[in-house]
Length: 217
Image (tube, rainbow, N blue to C red):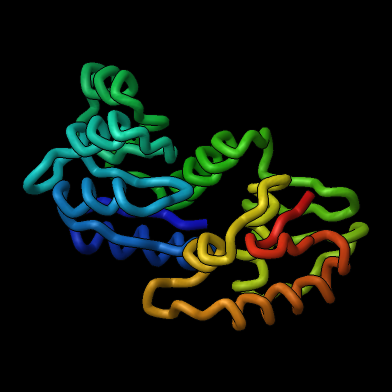
């Protein structure tokens, strides 16, 4: 899962980034509203964490630009403001949730999980596919009631595919959502990763759509 963090305070941005990375998310940063506006318009994310008090362009304007351009990723707004007017304006523009600073990191992670889960049509953190269960809260995977031992990359790939159950995911898209930008791999590396996953979850769960990518049906 790929998350954009739009926050100009370096310490806060790094703390959020470290917490998300530890929870098996792929993280991208934007330090001001102008950069965020461009990145959100040109790249895809599973969720965005957006501060309101940004340099160059404020957060509400950035969000409004994204929604007017048809960008539908869920957005969690961070703000030191606590007035109901800000929240009403943000919700009317297209925000999905709010979190007021200071906040507990566990609460932020829970809200991000909920945003992604709802946007993909799931009601709980447990996603079931036959005898397979993926728990996005604990990053654990169960097969026939037994915990599978997966590497972080294997979990990221399986988690993204099962959140997009029924939709063939192109290889490039899958790579963007499981690899960091500084650690980007080629399609052959991805095929090896999927091969390892199939040995653990069974050969028939993840299917190959030739010329497209992979799908869990």
